[in-house]
Amino acid sequence: MESESEKRFGFLVTDVGRLCGKRFDDLAKSTLDLTRAQCRALAYLSHHGEISQASLAEILEVAPISAGRLLDRMEEGGWIVRRPNPDDRRERLVRMTAKAAKALDKARRVGDEIAAEALQGLSQAEHEQLIALLQRVRGNLATAVERNRP
Image (tube, rainbow, N blue to C red; front, side):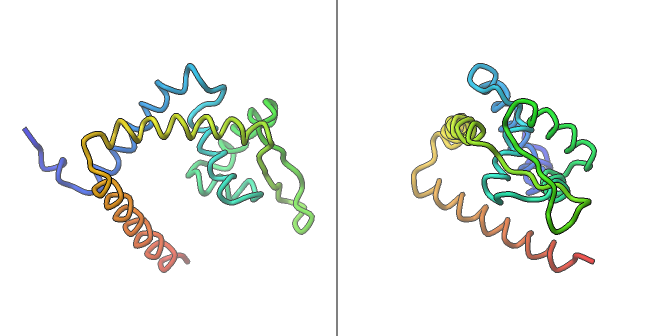
């Protein structure tokens, strides 16, 4: 039986994200040397390029100290490099390494496999429509967040 929550946008988006994350963990265990959190960090670094550690923490929606611990492990593994920001001594800049770029390609292949499972039974047109609609929703929410920043 379908509950009221099953028809709610926020519930569905969150639950799809949760299930995708669980499936990623299951598939990644055998193919990646990175955790899901580390893969997310690399994906954002790939998208944004070199950024401050504080900005990355904000994007990942984790406390700066948690991001620092995550990045400590990633730096030890050779996945990222941190350096002082020449324009602000208090800040550290983070970028991914060539090793990380190769690993991110593997992580994306895992993501592609999950997407194929998730979109099974949808036509190509439905798949493209779903992606386009989600991009519009993301744009709407990004605009609302920016508009309401202090």
